[in-house]
Every structure is written in structure tokens, then in C-alpha cells.
Amino acid sequence: MATAPAMSRWFPSRVQLNAHQGGGIVFTGDPHMESSTGTVTNWEPERHWSFTWGDSEVDMTVEPSEQGSKLTFIEFLEAENTAARNAAGWHVCLHAMQSVLTGDTMTTPLDWEPVYRGYAEKGLPTGAVVPGINDKN
Image (cartoon, rainbow, N blue to C red; front, side, top):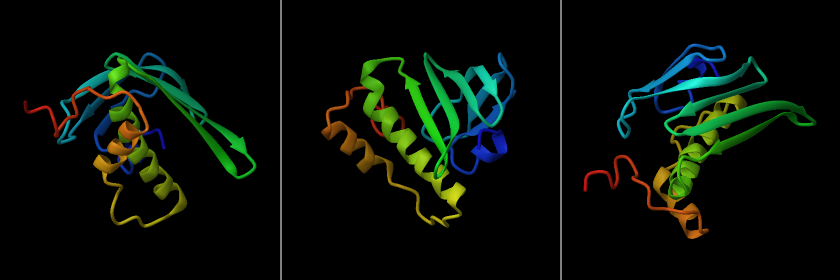
């Protein structure tokens, strides 16, 4: 699920990925975000990978579990006020990934805004620009 073609099934941006430690990663085509780049900081195929994205770093590890596999997902945030925004975005993406992996024919993806409001109501820090919503001020 970490190759560029596989990510296109659950991630909103098109991804160009040089799949090796130190390789570049480019995100384009999301109507709510500017194109951006990062660097692959760890690459262990089918087990662990991490990358920078802006001033944040995303880390994903897959391990065997009794149910099949366990994904541990961590984002080291660039700023505290991005917590609710980024949590909601990844929540929606990981829900879509789960649908792909289980063969669920999810016809309507999760609506991002209610997920965001839920995280904000639970006390996750807010205030960061939300692309496509409050970035036109």
C-alpha cells in the first residue's frame, strides 16, 4: 500500500515516489492543497517507511498480528495547531486504505469536515490553515 500506484487508491494526492532511503517524494493533484515534496527517511519494503512532508515526518510500520497485520502510524507534527486538521485527513485516508485492503466497495468516502469537527471537539489543537476551507481569507 506504500507504492505510488497503490497509494492512488486511498490517498487524495498523486504521489511520485523514489522508493529508497533518501529518495524524493512529490505530492500533486489534490484540489485542496498546493503541490509539495518530501524525502524518504526510512525504506524497508512491506515493513516500515517514513518520509518528511513539509516540516512534519510521517512514519508507518506494519507488523504481523493475530488478525493478520497491524499498522502503526505516527506523524510528528510541524506545529501543534495542525493536530485536528492532520488527524482528520489521515483518518479519512486510513479509512479508505482499510476499505481497499478488505475489498469493501466503499462508494462514498468519509466526509472530512465532520471528522475534523469531532477531533476539534475532543480537544485536539486547531488553528492551522485548512486547505479548501479557511485558506481563502
